[in-house]
Structures are given as C-alpha cells and as structure tokens.
Image 1: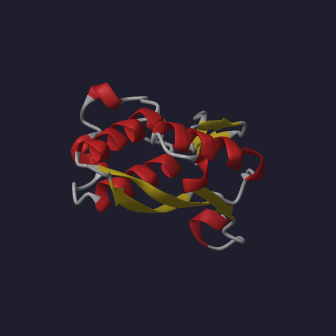
Image 2: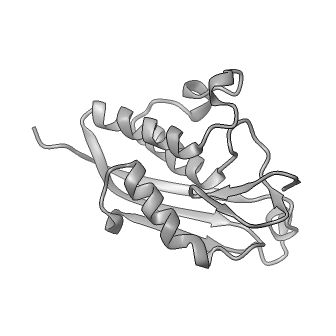
Length: 148
C-alpha cells in the first residue's frame, strides 16, 4: 500500500489514506477477474495484452481492461457462467462496497448480477496483507459456450 495513491477495488474508489501502486489504477480485484477470464480462454495473462510498457494503459480504469477481456471472451463464443472473486485486505472494510463491485463486474461483463460473487476477508495480522502492506485478490471464472 502506498501513500498518495487512490485505493480502487472492484471499480470502486474507496476512501483510505493509502492505495495500490501500479501502471493502471492498480485495481487488484478487477485484475484478478480479468486474469481468470484470460486463463479460462488460454490467452495468457494481462501483461501480454495490456503491457505496463504501453502508455495507453497508464492510469487506465481497470474496468476498461475487464470489458476488453469480456469482448475477447464473446469473440471466441463464450459468456460468463459465473465469477467467484475474493479480495484479502486488512483495512479498510470492504462490506459497504461489495454490492457496487458486483454491479460493476456484471455491467462490464454484460452478465446478470446473480453470476457475480465478490467476497472479502482480512489477513488477521498475518503476512503482508495482515500488516496492511498490500492486498491479494483471487478469482475463478466459469465460462459457458454461447448457443449458435
């Protein structure tokens, strides 16, 4: 976590004195979902498609990246079956923001809200997450073939 950076998770700017450092808006949760989609499609990782050497992606809203991954998914004949995502962060509390995160993902991926799960947990003072030095995010995506 870095002083002077915005904290953006799940496409929500969360009031906090520290944020995540990265080339884009550093939204680790949205990146985890995008990575899971690319992985399910066997298309490599975000660094391949959205390199941090490309100024186009500097400061980018990660929901734009997620929408682009959704476009790649549809282009290949798939849609979201479901998304299960988890952010591990000591502070601040995520509960007030979870439903907005779910809506952001559902909108970006053009899927029903019922297909999107966002969960949060704390590091319980263990490791870099527990010490408040950073966050970790994980996601699993189930894809369905589109009819016709």
